Image 1 (cartoon, rainbow, N blue to C red):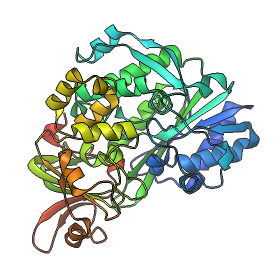
Image 2 (image 1 turned 180 degrees about the horizontal axis):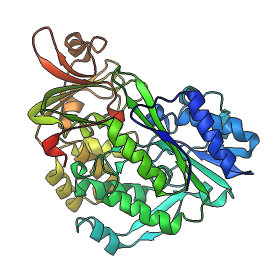
Image 3 (image 1 turned 90 degrees about the horizontal axis):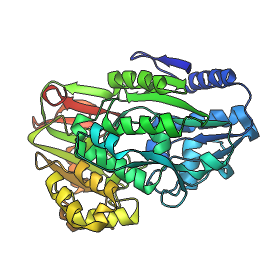
Length: 427
């Protein structure tokens, strides 16, 4: 059922608009006595989930007893991040999700189904896992809040992914990432109906059907002025709400370029991107637009680690981003990588498969990632200060730029908010 919907490529919503929409939907839901909000974490800051969570707290007051950021494998939020993202929402409402220890397995998606929808590329069961609070908390409303946007693992982010991955466990997260990686991320990104989404939907229909989940979905993008804009707000309790948001997201978050891009320069906001685990969105979201033999330059002033999780960081350092065949062979031969398929999936996602080069330019404070570290995992290294002299992000506009020396580049300031492709690579 849809409780509220507004959105179009011309729509521009304010915080007051979000408040009116969410309050209208909550009025329709009727009285609730114990509510938990499940927003994304700070890595999804542009989603406006922080504002929506604050609005829900203003509406429900002490009936909103818990806020469980959907961390997935990410590190817990700091007090500073919580204050910045969630405003006046009380700090003592926030709980940390531990993806290795805080989960309950509700059941499994059968191996034969996973094998069928992955076209035989994987053959294992998939566990439907969620944080135990959602089961044991006796909530009469679970507000799952987040943004629908093209995504490298599932095709289009959010909806039941926010619950099954964001509050999920290590096995479920690892296996879902691996399904998408071996199926082929370029066959998935920007598509609402993918093998990974089918797995999530199967689990939702059987294992989440009795949970009082309401999905609050935004569509946010970068407009022609280079500013973030809220294009849509959709609130409902089933897949229809996701389909509406996904349709709009494809209109406003997807850019079809007229020719393959020879050089792409991406800026990683230092408040959001401190690892290649997240920063590789610069690779994922542009790979279908970059020409064979092209170059991706990633400006990463706050880069300090490969993986946010220490074990994943170690595995990235050990194996590097050297392509699908190399990674699949490593999975076959090494039990520790086979037991951490999410890391294996990330190694596949982060490789250009030798088709174009990737140059990472970390800031001077990135003592943990030296030039040798960057090059050891398969990337080139660039001096950030020197590169910024040539590519001054304050002077660049979104999209194509012709520099003073005649060089043409394509500039992207917010890779997490979009997907770029050349028509021959997106069918």
